[in-house]
Image 1 (cartoon, rainbow, N blue to C red):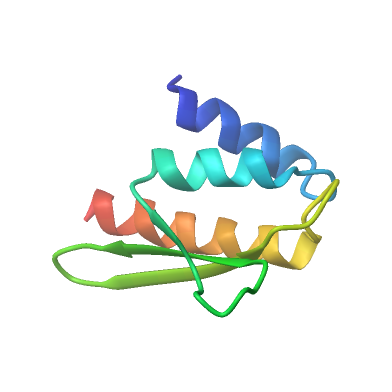
Image 2: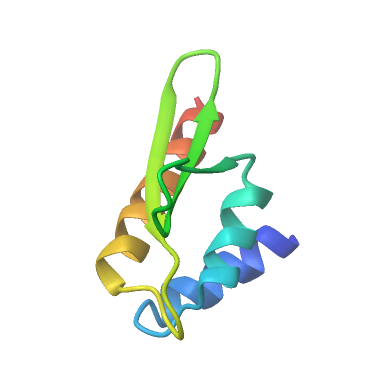
Amino acid sequence: MSKAEKALLKIRQNPKSVRFEEIDKVLNLYGFERRQSRKGTSHYVYILKTEHKFYRVTIPFKRPFVKKVYIQQALEIIDEVEEDKDQ
């Protein structure tokens, strides 16, 4: 099992207590590029461009934990990326 798979499994098991650093690490391991808006917001935008699709997910920087709804959105995007890699 790779680092990305282990970290993803940990997040899936408990999506309510995921730190920003953990979801950031997982998204980076899956190839997403992180950008922050220039307007002083605390939200980070993660983008992944593949041959066939364009993926985008926004995660706010929140301490101590990121809200569950944002984690679920990120997990859905990661699942889509994995599906496209399998095809």
